[in-house]
Image (cartoon, rainbow, N blue to C red; front, side):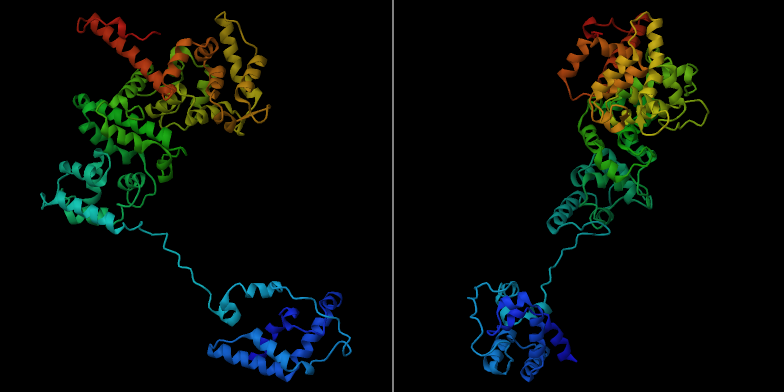
Length: 540
């Protein structure tokens, strides 16, 4: 049975390996049947059976053997026993055999081991060891990193043998964890699961080193500290402890400690801004992927290092919060912390059209968090205001694209743009301004955006153009449309001076100056403040 198996393997060999001087290679090409006949005759010989049996025995014992050499010897010794296809002396001469031989022979000659034992090469393949690349509980720290962390931990806890209290935990965050200091309370409570009020050395090592938090990147560390057990995302509530600690410890926010209600509003505004820019899915569940794609961690580290909180313009600026809150308070005439259509239409000195306000309150761009029908809450207003004042950001483009896309088919057609522009055209006529026909506006928009197809505009087209925000201003914000047409030289110069600032940063700065001037003006009229210095007034 073993011989039969090996015989089948031998039959699959290249006929050229038989080295038959009686047969010309040309004959093989002309009549392939010749090779099969020769195989059949050769396999029927008794010498062939003994050869195959010896090869099988050698393979079983693991002995080294030379199949090619043996086959050659058999042919040389008993060549007379092979039947001849040609009459004696009439066989044509063989052509000179090249050193490379047949492709099969050349493959076997590539390694010395293949000459001695081709079957052994197949039976003993090389094994490649692949290092472990997935760790269910995180990658364990390297030995050197672990020893360094243990050394710093020992130095810190040696003077606190009984453990650290929550107000003493900031040193751990700065010296060992290398995270913003206002995460200390969140990490403390994460380790102190039993609420003992003390975290000792062993408990910290168990969580930070044995839990493999040490080897994680900064974004993943923050994500693990903030998220609730069993959750794969962060919610707005998860950020509350961090913001409360920031308010109680940051030197730039000390003045708010006497007004707890504004501390709460500041924390809410920061969280709303974080989710507006970072939670791109808009479902209120911030994933680790979204956290890594955003710039939140860099802004947190900046806030921890900078004493002037207003210099941290990403998310944490108090001036930005002040502008948002004051704008909301101005529109909320009855101060019930809700805004309706009639309130919102007054925004920006009646800059918006009724049609776009209707679309906002239809909750097409974003579902309202307010539970009262026809009312917009503070969080909804924050999303609206950030979208209105910085139409260059991707969240803003998505917000307004949904408003203009009346049939929600993913494209903006000329008919949809004309529907919104009609009210703009009517307002220009009422204000005795020279109206611009829609046909001219459409050509201007197409030239500005350069869409892939001229018969409609996609969100991708808008995101690929730096001037796409002007399209929405043309369609529903008359004040900004006229400012764009006049090309205010001051605004152009301001943009060139600091291109790193966003449209929102510039707007918030102008509005804060205006609001502070109005407040100081009221104080002057009441005799409670010094006269405003005209040199500080903004030139607009």
